[in-house]
Image 1 (spheres, rainbow, N blue to C red):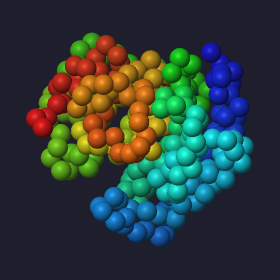
Image 2 (spheres, rainbow, N blue to C red; image 1 turned 180 degrees about the horizontal axis):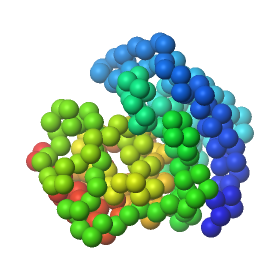
Image 3 (cartoon, rainbow, N blue to C red; image 1 turned 90 degrees about the horizontal axis):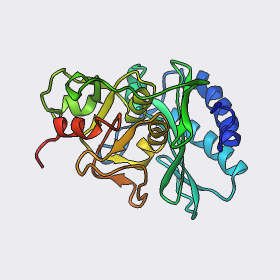
Length: 261
């Protein structure tokens, strides 16, 4: 299917240029950095600027849709809703590491419909949805299938790695920032899998999950192995972590990285 001719083409034609227009501002190093309460990481003026820009755009064009964002009050609605992380990977932005993404997910009645991820430093947009397909800009993308789990290139959280939460496996996993960014890498076949051993909020993953599914991948909970194609959004914290990879190998990769509770 052509990237411009799918069920969410209207939304895509609105969101992609809006994301790219944010690029120059996102490439500026933030000047105002504060720590959120509860060890929830940094907050910058860039997070708030992107949040204001996207909420104004999407709620003007889709006034009946709901809104869930890390940085602004929820607007609950039945049916469709937008789930947004203005910058997933703010720590990386502050440190000047290009591993982060603006994450926009469109979900309906708890199910993933379509997602967008934007990395300004690479000037690319990943987008797609289950049963529709996935693209890097206008180029179709697909998850990769290594010959066996022990040959998979697996990306894990830099924070989890520093805390000693990643088990010792071969080949050694790659520490990469931002779960949204890592989901984009999986969808595009730049890595084979990603494993998150710690809980994630819905806004961290709602943009990336539909893209991985559209690219022929699977996303399951790290702890239970249950599918994450549909999720409860209240509370927003998804306790089980996640694993994303080719459907043939995702469970085996989960088992390789599973830590005792």
